Length: 144
Image (cartoon, rainbow, N blue to C red; front, top):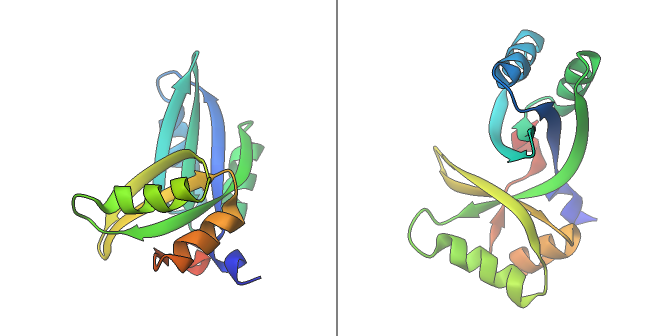
């Protein structure tokens, strides 16, 4: 299936929300030679979830698991987005009209433009709808 080349393996790290935890994660990845390409942090009741795109997801998973962190993988997609008013609306409208729910999202502005990272409830259908509407998705090879 062609859509597979757009499914990016995101690393999710669960951790207590207290001083020094993010530094411990970042330092462990640095020592392992893993580059963090994008990330977000969400907090709930004293715990945090660090979601990250890294260049070596399997090594990141092993490194952090060996240190006692709870780590999981999630498929996300990365959409090249216009870096101007209305850019987010275009993508959200395509998915909303297709009945595809955005569970969470984060974005970054890279050297080639803005990128929207999406976790949707129907990943493969989301890829199909965005491509059919003329959207541009980033290939998984750019993140590994």
